[in-house]
Amino acid sequence: MKAGDIVRLKIGATRSGVVTDFVDRKCWRTSEMGHAISWNKVEPEPHAVILFDDGVMRIPVIDLEVVDEV
Image 1 (tube, rainbow, N blue to C red):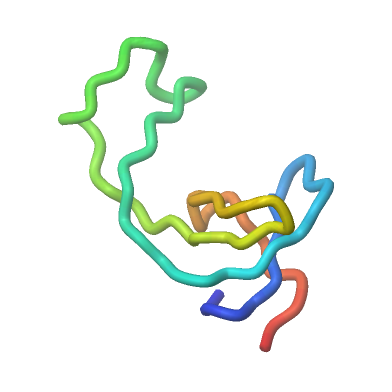
Image 2: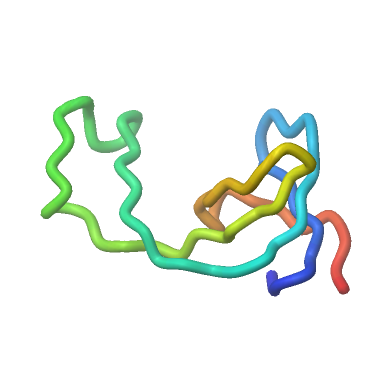
């Protein structure tokens, strides 16, 4: 995955977007780690900055699939 690729969520995708950048952010996954958030227990992971028709979102790379490469 690289900037310019068109991506969508692996599960439940209803729309696609364009990758514009990558950032490292922490992500607390309640299904795996529970509801009590403790940010010092997680390390930052790569997130893609995705441009959609109505704005920008930062989504973990592990949750995305490439639809079309540039």
